[in-house]
Length: 77
Image 1 (cartoon, one colour):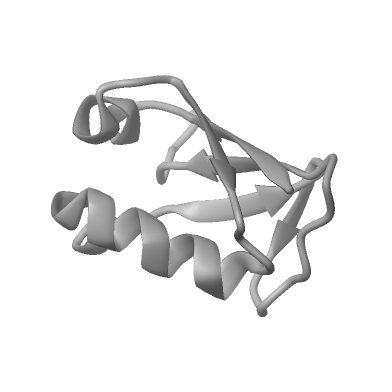
Image 2 (cartoon, rainbow, N blue to C red):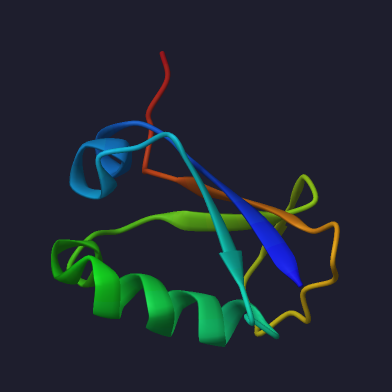
């Protein structure tokens, strides 16, 4: 099952892309593990994860059409 991963800000510099398509990822815990294995610098980075435009803080099941966004910390003023 393909999962689309959108990567923003300085996280895209680590991954060297703004978008990835991954398969065989059942949930967000599996996604984080796969990303950390592929991009070790990402493991030390802080970010918020959103699945289908909803931020998630717990493990979330991913479907065939899930879109996951990795959002770095931001501040406003």
